[in-house]
Amino acid sequence: QVQLVESGGGLVEAGGSLRLSCAASGITFSRNVMGWYRQPPGKQRELVASIGSDGGTHYADSVKGRFTISTDNAKNIVYLEMNSLKPEDTAVYYCNSLIYVAVRGKDVYWGQGTQVTVSS
Image 1 (tube, helix red, strand yellow):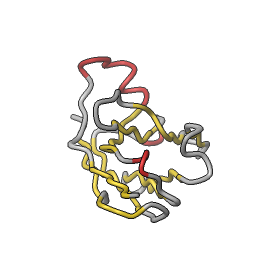
Image 2 (cartoon, rainbow, N blue to C red):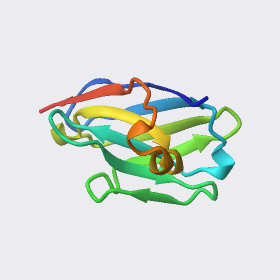
Image 3 (cartoon, rainbow, N blue to C red):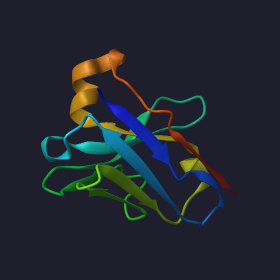
Image 4 (spheres, one colour):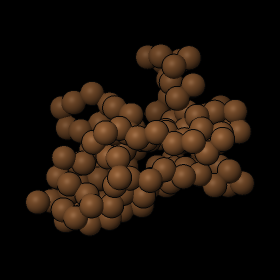
């Protein structure tokens, strides 16, 4: 059974930094691609960063150069280091397995997420 617990969000001024964490269970990191998604107010959820079992990473253009995704495979934790934050980064942030999301579709389980609010 998949469980995802995101934490680390908060209110920060533009230009500031935050580090998000996601504790995952029921997902084997070595056989998955893990990702951080975000859902801005009134908008669809979007993928912003992913990391494969080989450590390869991909980022949305909007966060490239500012966000860094990493994992601690021993602890099954996914991190998202966010620097130079902008007001448009304001959203609820979620983690998940890209494979799990693709397979389960609309029935996919999401954790509670963590709110990130960037003030201008």
